[in-house]
Length: 290
Image (cartoon, rainbow, N blue to C red):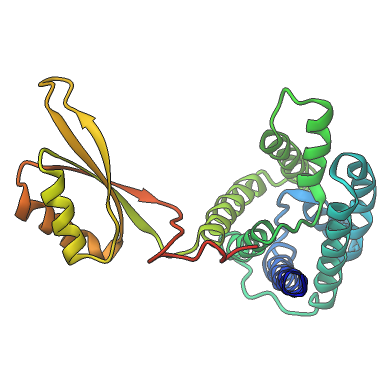
């Protein structure tokens, strides 16, 4: 029982450390790139950025204040523990944003600002999602609206809300290019957050269709540290039974795997596809995340 409590505390400490790092990167995204270049992205921080551009309001304080009614709306549907984590994350993000506001902008090129802002934002969002944290905002509001209007999915509601904020910023500032910069920001942020979630340790998923599954599998097992699974198959044109061998290899092992297959069965049919995440022996541990 004591070990379980220690492990739970360890996971919670890691969760909040990741949240602090994520808030730091998100604050850098705002203070170094978006706010100085008048780029209104999506989310509550986008509204706060617009307020800063028009009225010189503090982005962090405005973000905290705007999130309070959203958090109260989400209390019933999302539960108290999740809302408390959202409030803590939102408060830390707001404090970091205003504390780091003194930093000078690295670039006043809006295109570079959108690109590097997306990089920093993607790291932050990836950490939030990976460790089950959230800063609230349009993500939480999308969940709340979806609860009442389930005909449209949560991602669609978030996209609608963010799109409205981006368009409002472009109209108010009379700058249609803001939409283009925001799209670049969102695209890069999405890609980077996916990388944070799945990691850089990509692998190749391989299907080997052969009439000699035993010989091919024995060769692979003898010369490779990867496991092989035999799936029974049948050629529908000829009606001939075939083995379908399933294996995952790291990218640098692919060439050697194909060479081994060819050395046993030159007529084998090999299908290689990308994988975004592989967990288990020889790859990333199943316990890598919380």
